[in-house]
Image (cartoon, rainbow, N blue to C red; front, side, top):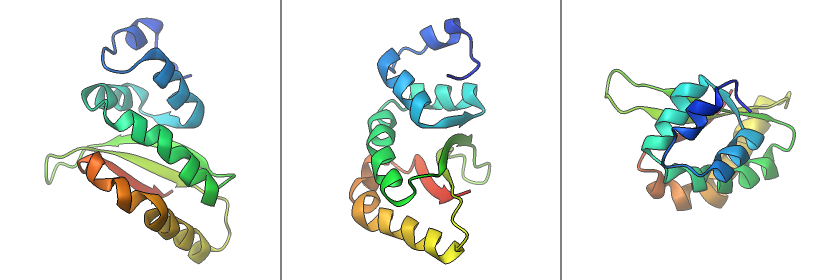
Length: 122
């Protein structure tokens, strides 16, 4: 769990407690308040993040996965970034694995994200 107070968790009106607990079990939140506020504004992203976890794990079984809210001041279109912190020594293999996630899953669901999620290597 993040270090947010229970009051903050309860104030999230668009994300179920169960989904929130699942997300917090699967991903580490960087800037948790910003991540949760963003997800509360875009609750349609939650099922995609839950679904995406298994696809990411299939290629990066030991990686730490982080969610971070990243505002983009140039285009005023913030995103939630999924950072994959892999221990793969071979950088090209990590890139290939990420590209395989794109082919196997991400390209099929990216329209559903409305450009609000980005996957990358950390």
